[in-house]
Amino acid sequence: MNAAVMPRIQIRAMRPADLHAVADVETASYQFPWRLGIFRDCLLAGYQNLVLDVSGELCGYCIMSIAAGEAHLLNICIHPSCQRLGYGRQLLVAALGQARDAGVETIFLEVRPSNYVAIALYRSLGFKLIGRRPSYYQADRGREDAVIFAATYADTD
Image 1 (cartoon, one colour):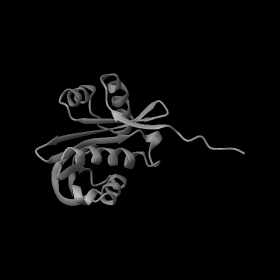
Image 2: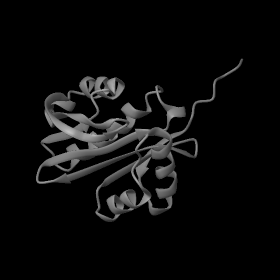
Image 3: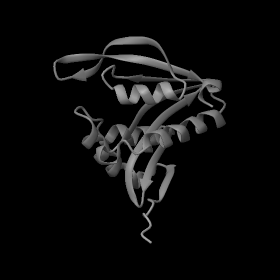
Image 4: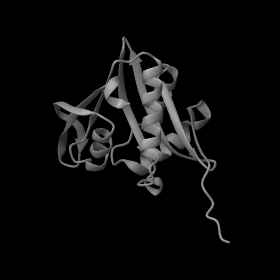
């Protein structure tokens, strides 16, 4: 009998030792990536910083700020070689759980309107479109708007 080997998946708090791997995931995923220093600052600021470890390899991360009953999903990313395997959903659900445990009532995020896969994930977890930020993201030709989504904790169960 041939049994498939299931990967060992761990979602845990980001550590300083993870910063270079997190930056590598970011660089592999985005045309205009965050710099290593931004990730270091997020760690130092005490944000909710999670990483996704798949069989010993860091494959994703999530950064969320929490204050005054609100959360802002600042960045969530899965390495391109690990996408479309459900890891983004698992990581986001873990982050939403942290928000709930911290007493968050509303969670906000921005996403490129061209990122259809992420938008479908957010909508499937109860996020609703609430607005637009003009010229928010750097793009090949100038700037791209961001669409703003929000969910209340009751919507994310």
